[in-house]
Amino acid sequence: MKTLVYTFLIGMLCCGFSQQLQAFSAIPDSLQLNAWLEDAERQYLSLRDEYQRKITLLAYELELTDKSLEKAASMGERLQLIEQRMRLDRQLQMLVAIEELDLLKIRYRKGIDLIKLLYEKILALDHHFSGMKVYQNISVLSNPNSYPEFREVRSLLEQRLKKRNLLQLPPLLESNPYLSATFSLVSAMLGDAEPKDRSKELERISCILDFTVSMNADLDVIRNETRFLFDANRQLKLDCERLFDDYVKVIGYFVPLSTCRQNDDWETLYIKLDDFIAKMKDDLMQNSAASYMANARSRRTIVNLEFATQRVADFIASYSNFIRQGTQYYRKFDNIITGYENRDRCSDALPAQYDELHEDIRETIDKFQNTYNLPEIQGSRLKDLLYGMTS
Image (tube, rainbow, N blue to C red; front, side, top):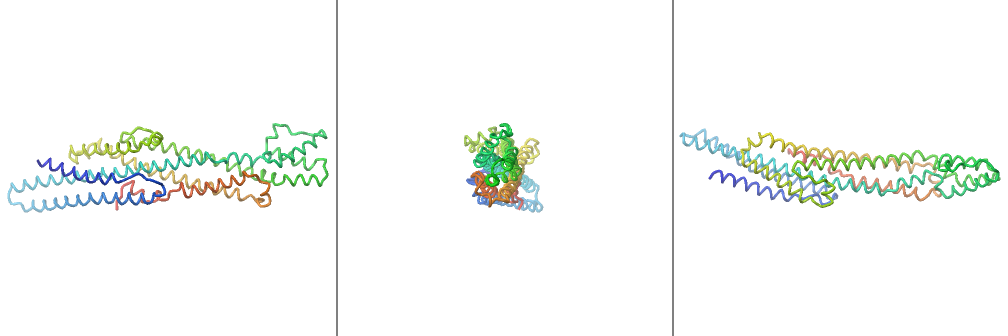
């Protein structure tokens, strides 16, 4: 009879706390991340405080029993109090063990929500990088042959050289921006036209030659480092997918992150977590708390869950470092583009791709700072939640 009452008591406690656990929802939108974090903290602490009240009551009953045991007059009374003390001690150990599981469940669930959020951010970044015209714009800007004005003047110079049967630039070398620029410059200076005409032709292409030659190396920096960031984001995406695989296999879920997202299978995952924790509680009920926690397999399962939440915290650090690095890179790109010393003088000669590249860079800086940067997840509050709050 006492066993039934005891089981019923623990069952009611678990039921009440489970209702609180169900109140935790996934992050609806990254803009509400701070509100989500505050709500998660509040509910985590509320659940922990509720357990602590129950634990305090049991501990107080245990203390009263110990005092009564000291004053017990008869052997029968002492045996009854000893039995009562053992029962209260088992209940206390059981409640502490169940508290650990329920609080761990909250932290684990929050880890899933954060992986989900970061994956969406990484996919959005991947889409952003793929949609940028950096490579096309830089190819145009760095090659003088892409400028209509330059091609027109070069064609005129080549016609003059052809009439005089002078050296022609082979087609293979025409595609080389440096050689093409040098050839046109030399042709303009040494051609047979009047000096005034040669000066006028040289003036027409001077801005183009100045920009393509002086900015070529800097444009290559932008192109190469943009490719580096694109590849680094792809690697971050793979790391996130591997983290998810390792994270959820602990509870017996083996669907890849991309498939889970595509099929909107999150509810199945959450049910899997509920069932996993419920089974751990069932195992706990069938044994004493002490023997359950001493069991190597049970302890290893809890350690695996704990370790999984710590890995999420580590990945958050990797994501935040990448966003910080990306912001620094694009600020440098902006300085490169705006730092062209003859920008004002040659603005009319620069093609539309110059402004497009500059706009792409400015837009990316804004996105890195305001869309992909998540300062709320970088502080100690979230780490406290994932590692388990101590205050």
